[in-house]
Length: 240
Image: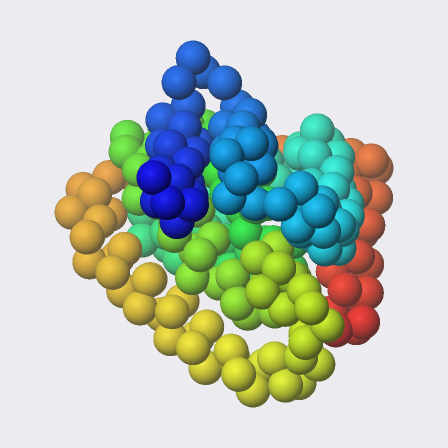
């Protein structure tokens, strides 16, 4: 069997493991096993593998830093407050709630990365919908899933994959980045909104949202976490 065929087989098995997660093992286990197997079968030289790992330092540090900040914010219930704020300001309207959560998803994705939207904002939105006695939270959860992709090219920091794509020192300046991706990002966000609105129109018409929603109070620690996230986002945009 050729090296090319082995590479595709290993890649296919790795993706299958990541998606299906046999034995309930984390996705990282299957990704690491696939990479190791590529070295074992000779599809990838050990030196090339180590070089590839070394080139990802910026991505690792970015992800670690942003996810640590996001986790602190989650523990201090900052994202719960954000979701509850949107729910309380919906004033009983599912459509208004849809728009508000969509806006929150754009902001979180653009300035904190799409991982923060998928991993941290989604549970907060679900909890807020439950508190607002929303019968079908699916339209709002779909927002978190899709806006995490649609807004992932708004800024260089919106998606860690952007750092991988331009990881060889070709990262455009912020103005150049915006000239390349601002219009496509706006189109992607608007098209995604229209598609979600159309496919979920029945639920948005028939559902109900409670008008008496308890807004999560912001503690001093939560305010500090929010300030840290804002300052970090500003600095990341500035150094772009």
